[in-house]
Every structure is written in structure tokens, then in C-alpha cells.
Length: 601
Figure (cartoon, rainbow, N blue to C red):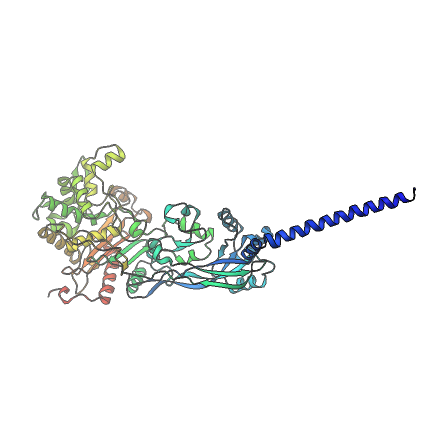
């Protein structure tokens, strides 16, 4: 009996193990049935999705052209380095490779990963554009070692003439996290390339185009193994600007060694022929990998190369502003063309001595002579008669203290003070002694070179200041229909006569043209008071006066207005007027004036 007991135990164990195996097989078969039959279709769809990926095709931006169809900004197709985060294996090793092989700082890569931390991992990160042959070869030869790195052949923005017209064209870059939070950028997502400044930003929407898509099959390491279907990208709209490349190149050459701004426009249509801000920058820097060191160099440069000084630089207008004061005084009837003043070089006003720029004095001067010789004493006197609020009102009519409306982002309005302004800002009353500084373009008044150009268009045609524009061929920006004369025609002719004498025999002689009548005005905007500058004698260049010059020509039928400021350039007649003369010569070579615009013998 005892010998049968072990056999019984063995049989029980075998039955138990067999039963367990049988039960396991049943469970396994049931699970296989569930997975393959019951849920088979669902899992097949998931598997298909895992190997099928939608890849966006970037759309080429529209071209930016000059008025004659010459290309200023285009696209070139180049390889970009793409990081696919879902395949990252060893982050530390990857950072080392990106730094050694692609010159990408570890801090930069970390920051890029941080920016994408809330973005789905399937969306790739563009780390670098315009890869070199060696960089392309490395990625291709290390596909298995670094499956997270891949190449993408994408259209990349190229600015054909590098820094030429950089402030007008602007530049493009990847949208930032801060921009994505703004309502105007709701249609974009992380990684999209948008316009950051200039025309690229102002007309970003038409330039964008429409992205395409590719439905591709991928393997386990993210490599494309096949193409299911493709929807091509649509190129953005081309923009034809009012710029003339030849005139722009000449303006850039003339301003090469200066700091300041220059703009030339058509006073009748507002079309901008050229616009230069110095120092400049190369917008191509922003389409590649801009290192922190290079960005800091641009951002911390005291001469502000990223600022468009034509629309964002606000300066005291100096004697340029005397034209506005003269027109206001005549319009208000506080003076007549015969009103005279005796200039000895200085006079006593409000318990202090004020000076004319000519210490020897101009003697007896009337309106035309006062404009031609830029007599401070004459304008001090009419400024007292006008008062600051009348000056402010006429300044608004002439386009100052408000934006011109040009199709560029970031324009500043400048400032013309008033009694209301000072009370609101400083809680103080306006004193008549402050007005005499404003009438010669000093004190609290500031303007931009573009506002001066728009004002001179108003003087040239006796109309509301023209609205400057850079885009041709669209109805988004149009000139307002001309209304009534802005200034009394008789008095305007006297002011223009004085402006002609500025060119013929006054402070702007270096802007004269041989066969074309020019009307203009020089200006010298002080950084220090006259007394301080005299005491310092050899004061540093950074404290030298800003040099202004503005003009229009031909007087009989104005075709061009030029406005220039040279920072710390000294006297406008010496540094700015010759530049204006060269611009006008080039312009009239390209666009000869009608015969009636020549000088009468």
C-alpha cells in the first residue's frame, strides 16, 4: 500500500501541471483570439499609424523685388539638421557630437529642447540650416548611430545683396514661445518661420505661402521607407517694392562710413526710392545659426545697427524746423513777408542771452533772408509771437508728432511739445522761454527723417503730407486724395524762394545741381548747449551736433524729396548736403526730369 502512494502523488502533480499548462494554453488562445479577431482591425490601424507619418513641406516665401523686378530677397534650397526627439538615446553624448561636429553650443541645444518641452515629441526641431558638405556627410554616414539626427532639404531665405536695404527688407526667424501666445499668431506653431522685422514682418501673411504634406512610411528608427501621397507646397506671393536697386546701392555707398539715416521718395505718390540706416546688419545671419556672441555684438552695439533710424530714430530737427515755424507764422498772420529783425549775433530774452549760429550777426533780415541764412534771432522773435500751441497745431498738420503710416513695423511718432503735453507729463506749466528753443528745432521737439521727408513733400506740392509706401501693385496703401492747399500759396512761394536761396547762396550750396533747381534746408541739431560746446572746444565726437539736410527738386515739378541725418556729423551743409546732391544726380540720371524743370538762362 505504501509503494502506491508516491505514484499517486506523481500522478496528481502531473495532472496539476498538465491542467495548468492546458489552462495557460486556453488563456493564450483566448487572448490571441481577442487580439487578432475581436480587436484585430483596431490594432492593425494603430500599427499602420505607427509606420505612417505626415511630414510637412515648408512653403517657399514669396520673392521681394525692386521696382524694376530685380530680386532683393529670394529662396535657396539647402540641407537643414533636424533633431527627432523620440529617438534620442544618449543626450549627453548627443550634445558633445552637436558641439564638436556642428559647432552648436550645448547651451543653445538645451534651450531649443526647453522651448519644445510642451510640443509633441513627433514634431522635429530644426537645429541648423545651410549645412556644409562635411556636416551632411556625417549625418548620412551615422544614421544608425544617431537615428535622432536627419537631414531635410528645405527652402531657406537668402538676401541677395547681404546688408543692402536690410532695415527695409527685414529678416525671418523661427517663431518664439512669446509670439505664439499672442492672438495674431494663433495659426502658427513651434518651428514655423515668420517675418521678424521690415517688409518680411509687415507683409508676412502674403509672403508665407501654404505648406504641403507628405504621407510617408517609416521604419523603427524613423527612416522613410516609402511615400504614400504628397500635396505640394504653394509658394508665397511675390512683392514688388518701390525701391530702385541702383539708387539704393548709391545711397548705401554714400552712407557707408556714416551713422544715421537717408530716405528719398516721390512727393506725389509717396513711393520710397531708397532708404538707408547706418550702421547696418546682414539679415542672412538670422537664416542660419546665429550664435549668442554674434547676437550680443549686434544688440549691445551703441550705434544700434538693428534700429531703422529713418523711422525709429527720433532727433531734434535743428534748423530744418524753421521752415515749419515760418509757414505757421505766415499762416497765423503774426508776421508778413516784410517783417524784419536786426541780428547782431546775440540778444537778450527772458533774462538770458541767446545766440545766433553766426556770432557776427546777419544785420537786418526779412523772411527770405532769414530762411536762406538760417538766422536764429529772427526765429526767436517770431516764435514768441506764435506761442507753443500754435506751433504744435501746425506741426500736426505738417505730419510731425504722429506716424506717417509707412508700411513698415515699429515706426515712432516723434514729439512736438505743447502746454497740455507738459502739464500731462511733468505736471508743470509751459514757460515762454522754452518756446525759443523749439522754434530752432531744439528742446523737447523730436522728429524722424521720414517725417521730415513727408513734410518736405507737403511743402513741395502744398498738400497734406504724402503717406510713404514701399509696396507697389497692391491697393493696401494708397495716397489720400489731395484736398485744399495746406499753406497759403503766396506765402508758400516766399518760403520756397528762401529754400532755393539756401541752395544757391546759403548754407546748402553743396547740394546745388547744375541744371535743376533745388529747394532745401540745412540743420544742425546740438547735443550740448552752445556755451558748453564752446567751453569744451575739442569735445568728443559723440557730443558733436547731428547734421541734417532735406530738399526737393525740381522746384517747378517736384519728382524727388531727400531727407538725411548724419549723427555727430557737425554742420548739415558740410556733411549731409553733398550726400543729397549725389543722390539727386543719380536719380535724375535714372529718371531724367521734364525739360521745363531745367534752370532758366
